[in-house]
Length: 92
Image 1 (cartoon, rainbow, N blue to C red):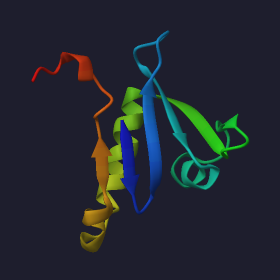
Image 2: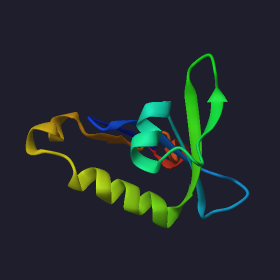
Image 3: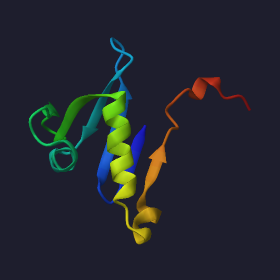
Image 4: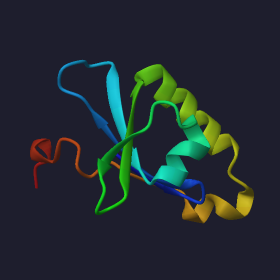
């Protein structure tokens, strides 16, 4: 899932080894604003991409907090993209 908002751009991926574990990818500054810096790690130096592992409950809290902090004029900038999820199950 991809989230685009005035608070940052994030990509959330479920890990294979643990169904309750999610990997959140974003820039350093976007992750630090939301989660602090203690658990963030470098994914790709060239692209300045960082990640953090969180559980589904922490992800739910993160998304709720993000939505609650959106001002009325920022709603147009808020987008959630689920297009990469289960595309093979769609029929024409």
